[in-house]
Image (cartoon, rainbow, N blue to C red; front, side):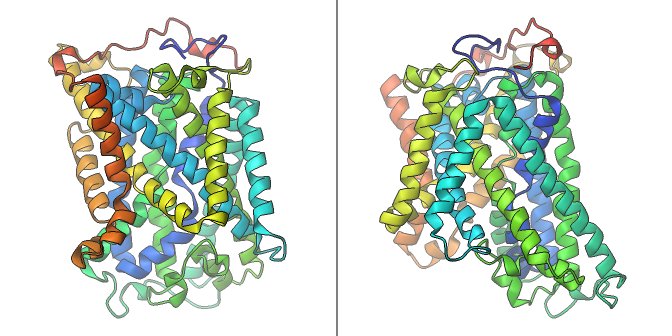
Length: 493
């Protein structure tokens, strides 16, 4: 779409209401990383070690979202942060960030539909798993093919299910800690057993940074929605400002409750994975409180979370490919939209890649492993791109003589926010598999870090072909999009 974001032939439509944007931001914060992987984080670093890692990663994500919010309200477009990288840093970086992000989510859709089949096997183990994956893919494709409103409504209700589950969990957990449910007072004794509250020192906390980082991935989706929000200048800042409280409520308190009720030495926490819902920390806490149907309830919630992730992935990758086309980084065909504003060629291309990736999981497990590995770090690379884009945007804004009051929304504590994000992103990327470097295991190094050289190839390949340069601050185009329409009065087709 053009920078004005106006509806019309060949353009996406502003069909997302404020409640949709808020819930999409919320849905990005809550996923299987919280419902399942939080247990392994506690087992690795102990109660306070896990809380420390999630707190600092949560702060990083908050600052990252405020950075994105400042840019997204200044220029609300689909595929936002790839465009910001191109506009505020270097066109080659925009090219690399865009294709990196599209690839990441296209692969993630395949991973999620595979996971959905594993979750369904909890109830119906005798039905071939590929059938459930095929059904999940058809449902996700149908939702994304209808309209952006259909996507927004679906995410709204699936996010609501996750929020209600966590609120109930926190209530039940607190009652269990005080002995009102479960039969006996627990208190905080699990915070001081054996090596607790910190276990394994800084290396363990660093390993949990990685787990926490994956848990938070998807929060940047709010930037993608800016181009299809009815009122991005108000709905995007509102959604971003709420991220801080959501992190405190949904992550810090949840991990506190789990750590208080289940000792970090529990073998169940060590085995936390989506393939065994029976030992999800949420399931264990509900069972400790005496809820017999806990496993089935949590299985349903986790299935909702996986479908939500795949749905968001399909949306994000489709819009990124659409944006790449409009920026001249992808064939023009991917920039075409149907009458309902859906970039159908981009949607079909993403679906084909997801389907081929899923088929490779059956026909060629090694190929599938490499594809998943190649997408492993792309979320952190995208965050790195957002942070560096905002750092240069704000510096250029001030250097060119502008007053911060001109911005519709401005990020907190600049330049501390983007600098913290850059440092932690580098720390997490390097800390993915330090043992592989210690043992000079080149196969593991390549599997773990393959997404880094792929992005560098995209960046330098485009740079050499197009002879692009990093844009000097005084020449960076920091002008806002010229929105002359009243967003709140736009029709919500």
